Image 1 (cartoon, rainbow, N blue to C red):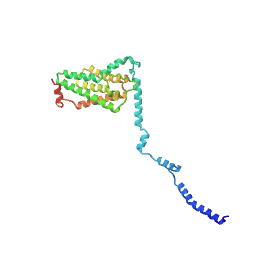
Image 2: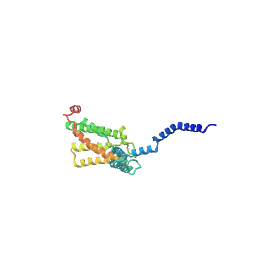
Image 3: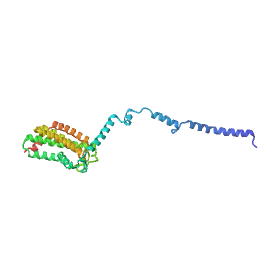
Image 4: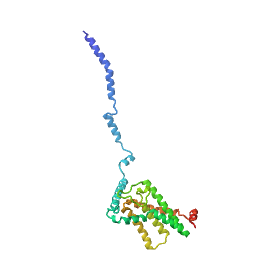
Length: 259
């Protein structure tokens, strides 16, 4: 039978040998793990620090952004309400054929063909100069409208019927209105370089307004497409005036059309 001394020594040995393991366990528990509640609390307190101004601007939309979104919503709503000739079953569907005739009057092809024909038939150097610059203006209009449409890529209104007269790839986009741009450009050009009676000048301005309104009534464009198109056409005429072609600045072109 073992003596009390030996049993006490064995217990002391066991406790002595187990103390390092116990201390190691306590030291490991004293270290805070990354997933511990205290660590999460510290990370939460650090995340609650003030955000940079740029991040705050991204999370909190500015007044300008809210205003633009509201204007866009109003534009879409008003354009749909004004699209009274968008289809045969629309409110003014019976006037759709007349609107399509007006549409053709502002199309680029009739204006290009008419200007080219005038150049071929003209015998006056002054008339050729005006017609050549009109041709330049029409080509500039086509290029600029196509570039802006390709960049913005705003789709046509949902209520539009794709039965337009002679379209190209970018014509599936809506912004800006090429008809409104061309109408404003041609109107400024004609009023500046042709001598017209007052009634004809008034009719020219009315034609621009009718073409612009018809784009919305047919459902081809939203209102902002037309408004920007009118502004773009007005500015393009200033570009044409600045780059005016004359026998001195472009003698090769005038020699080509001279008889």
